[in-house]
Image (cartoon, rainbow, N blue to C red; front, side, top):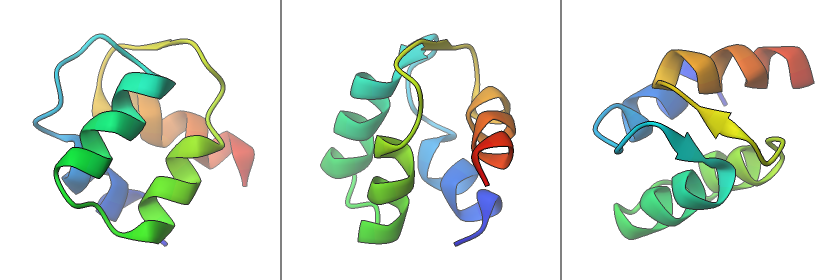
Length: 61
């Protein structure tokens, strides 16, 4: 799992977004299971961009 894969899956998502809306968007667009599992680990808060998501994921690892 790389943050670039997550970034690619979420680059067209509507922002700002919450964890819940990002997971729903990723499911709807057919993101791989490992991406979905990673997104489900995010804290439930607002994310302004794909970069904000990947920064937070970097802090979780």
